[in-house]
Length: 206
Image (cartoon, rainbow, N blue to C red; front, side):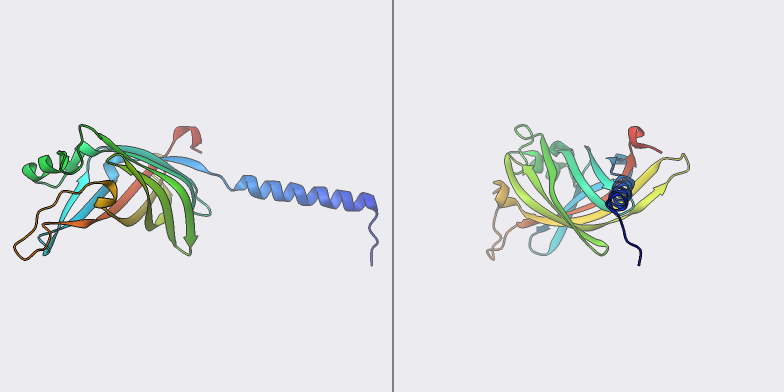
């Protein structure tokens, strides 16, 4: 068996530290901006206890910071213009923008900022602060990062899907009217569905 001197041990430790640093550096975290043309931020809520009304916000921006190799997300930040709600019904959209619901004159934006991210297999859980209607509460989104590809122009793009739910009363959106049978016209639970495509920023492009 070879005997190692103190000098050999120091050299070995130095080599190990260099390898460790190289491994850490290889895990690159890059910023990807939301592509509004290929992203939908949708919602649905129960109507008359028999159906779901679908809608989406049309104006928003945001970004994610992620490591494409490990599919680990470090940051998610999104700002949504509440007045851009669209349920394909003008009268209903006007009501949703009113003080009964989103009150867009007082609260023209809503935001989401990631607090923690946990990945198990292909599925991930993101917990972030949602600020809506002047109230901030934690909201969990569950989904997965589909992958990262290079488009024909040489730009890296990432895609992910996520879904979560909130109780609108938690955000002081309390309007309701009752049916004859005592049921609610609009459900308290609102389902959030996100299909997002993001573009790697030029500062991070390879």
